[in-house]
Image (cartoon, rainbow over all chains, first blue to last red; front, side, top):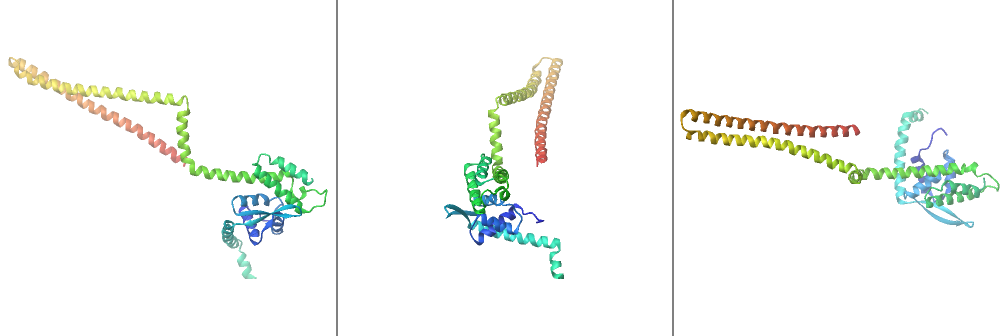
Length: 108
Length: 199
């Protein structure tokens, strides 16, 4: 992939995935990796950071004699995701303008 | 590298982290490796990278967060902190405090000396005027017009001397006041320009 993900965008992606349904580390990583180019060890620090700032919370579910730690979005997490979404739309529109993406679409 | 070796090395690499953060990371990766469902004897590092790399990512993120928190604290508590450090610095310094006291004492002594010289000039002027006036008045009682005029003349001369002393005193006082105020002004200007440079 040509474009790199920055830390806030990574936070936004993780919040977006967790908002749809509670996930554990492995499935979350696979889901994000399907779309963007990250390594399998990228998301742990992100999850820990979001958890420490109260945007995500965790709960353990027993699975095959061990625990699986699920991540769930909190109300402040939803609020932050809303902020990230509006920021993303502004950013995306501006980049579209610079790249002339809209012109291309109307020409086709 | 198998799961146990990987986690042991990760534990070692994270040994300087707070215990809670370290345990959380170990648990996460233990669980993650189980979820990878790898056949036995396969290398975990192909998926996750080496424990060293994994640890570095965790430490980098934690350090960044801590620096952010510290910077926030510093901007809100900055002024109070500087004030306290200044006060503590003055009291804690074994050399600066006696030196500062000595410097203040010298400046004070100088001011007193200059002040008393000016005061002495002023008092002499007043004394000259009073004694001159007294001699002038007393001259009328003197016998003979010649001595009357001589004594009156010396009386007036002393009054004149007194007026000169007082004018001199006023000039000196004005000179000293303007000198002190210009020194203080320069200090303030210097501080202002220094602050402006910093900003």
